Amino acid sequence: MRRRPGLAGIAAALVLTAGALGAAPDEAVAAPPTASYELIWADEFNTTAVDASEWNYRTDTKGWSQQRPENVTVGGGAMTVHLCPRNKAGAGCTQQVDSKDLYTGGGLISKRKTRYGYYETRVRTNSGSGWHSAFWAAEAGSGTEPRTEIDGFEIDSHVPDKVRHNVIAWTQGTFTSNIYGLDFDSSADWHTYGFEWLEDSVKFYVDGVLKWSQPYAPSAYTHNFLNTWLTAIAYDASNSPGVDESALPGKVQFDYVRHYARDVYADNDAPSGYSETGTGWSTSGLPAFGRLTGRFSCDTDSAGRWTFTPPADGTYQGYFFRAGGEGGQADAPVSVWDGGTALSRTRVDLTAPGSSWAPLGAHTLKAGTTYIVRIDRDGPGCIRADAVKFVRS
Image (tube, rainbow, N blue to C red):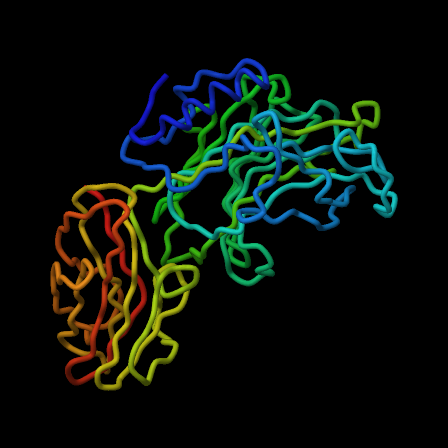
């Protein structure tokens, strides 16, 4: 078994889970694509109930099913979505409910909103046709405005040996691997599915093997912050023949979900740690990183600041997203702080048109420590605040 620093507890949890739920696949594949990633959030589902501080339930009606909270349980080392006949719900589908004569499914939606990194889950899908299981990321309740959706996997249960991955730039285009064959039946055993969202691309993995990669530049597509979804619904996809009622009750099980990070980004869009002091702050019309929003102020003594915590000890190259144009301050000071100690100070020219990452130099940073980046207006012109990043060497 390959182990990474800080993952001893997860390794132990995997052993317990394997014992509770059957033989596990080779755990060597259940890890990020590079050793530089650090685990920053996970739910191993080793409790007896859904963690309400981390998750919301999926409760919509879509396709052939109504999604219900009582169809989601945690126990035995896994999160289970119970797949039920019409107007039945709950563990074992024993509850009589009014589901409008629909089948019932369900799922969980993370309360956390995250962006870049490596995401992974381990799943055993159901037997019997008619169900669409998925591990995906999209901002909950965001409508149809420009935004990102990443489908780590979509599996339709009448073809359990096939899978699809997608990157959807809503209102801008859809990129898909198209449905392709696996060398296993996803309902017969546990398998891992992961996606790596980088600044310029998204890569998809099955059992640790890279299966598909899609360029996805932040200058071309909206890179917003996403909720993570683990779901199973009755749905007509991939020419489904309909729900096999003889296979109900059914279940889809998720062993865990994990998010790893290597670099750290801070943005002025929620949920990043960003704040402003002084007056005159307004939304900028200049292109912003990830096609989100930028801010500016032309008032004396105004300042924008970002807080961030690196995922691991190490040397990081810092960058400030420079949105330039007429009226900007020619030598705006951007400084990096550890508490009350200034680690660096860089003058950035905000007068030149265009946008780019301006280097802030190398910094030795520690995991668990909160650092600050700030830009101050201390001369003629306007300062602009958008995003910063620190890339680990």
